Length: 301
Image (cartoon, rainbow, N blue to C red; front, side, top):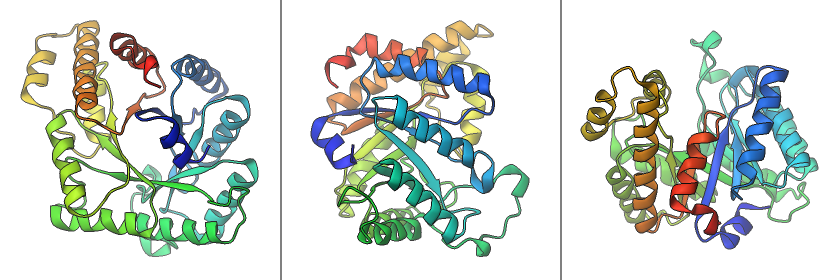
């Protein structure tokens, strides 16, 4: 289903992100998780992408299997880093032939074994260039859908870690939208005020495509620390830090606090007319399922 049709069908979208497993056992566990998620009737799921071949083939395999064995719309990530034009075209052609309708176009980070990667070797330096290329691919009429691929892009309500100038950051986001992006998925955040301010700045900049708010329930103290590293400097509000600190070494208590916080975030976002909520699941469904049950979100999908 094309993203335009998804937005037409769902006044408020609820979606989930997964990453490709590295083992057959992991793949089976993931499919069990996705079966649980399917019961929640998500608008779509998306699958992350490993740069430079780290999990690239695993992403393709997972996307194609989900597309053929699941009823939920599946959106693959595609990054510019460590990629040549012919490689990206092959991927787009494979997805087009399989009937995949959407792509999340990202700049991406070099894999750990290529930390000093020279970006001048990549055909496309920025996500904007990738969006432009996908639009040109769409114009060729290769895809069975005359609209071609729907295109999503990323944004950072708290600020992109590589762009300290917040004015230029919004210019860069606007360039992705002007290049042909159809919707925006934000990086995770824990203070809804950051999202509301970001949404207002988008409106001021003339960005009028759907913006989906990215949430990730905290499930452990260790995960909280790793989350901050992966997200490039996530800001934890003092009230959340105090609540987690009261839990001490009780991981179950930390998880309860994290789920409660994310539930309240989701409730307030819905009250502020959020266009969609995108859950970063880390390939687990339990926390998200609890949020759904508490807020009765299945009745909104």
